[in-house]
Length: 324
Image (cartoon, rainbow, N blue to C red; front, side):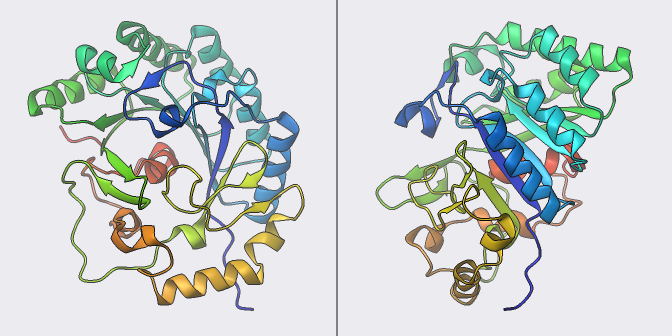
């Protein structure tokens, strides 16, 4: 069996509960389970992943709101104690209270990226993020920036994520100017993608600015990416509708990560996909998300569509900077 590099990008779903009902959210259309990751399950994932792949980046996300987990800061702190290189935490910002802000800043000593999702200015935002209060989220971010600066905790990077849902150019310019003026470290503006639930094919809702490629290249998720669900299972390795299309189904509570990642079954999947990148699953044929991994790292355009890529890479590497 040929050698395969350990995974570089790790996502752990810590919460399947949410306090909002966003119009474009696939998860809320299917219904939230309100389940949370058990701390011991989280520790097992982190222990195994970073013993096997110490240079990996970790992203804490939810099929809901990450900060609805009552031990969210404990999870971050535990990973930090394992010398995780960098951690990204995605949140809708509504629960980012001063108490949570202070805990993060006091207890998390390594590089942490806090990624807050705000889609547009007040009127657009509150139409999209049902149940959210725009002014409260702005105040949460403002106070977080001020507290971070006062405590000189610049290892904590704060970014804003905007999913562009047919916003006008005027609103987009206002959004960029407002948040940069507030002092955030990054702006990430992504084109919305949608999933055809009959075919599992992922397409952009709006034309995006990804470059054209003369031929389809193999997807990198089979060789560099892992996502764990709250049970400790490796959930899926594609952008199908959050697990309906599972390419692999392994359980970290029953096998070690090394055994799973280097298994003959996994290796065969990789070999087949590399030789037939359009034929492995119905979703692969028309999917465009693979293009993200072939962008040059100095690209400054912030119109990117791949949420999973951005939450892991931008938050802690500062690769993409907002355009003025």
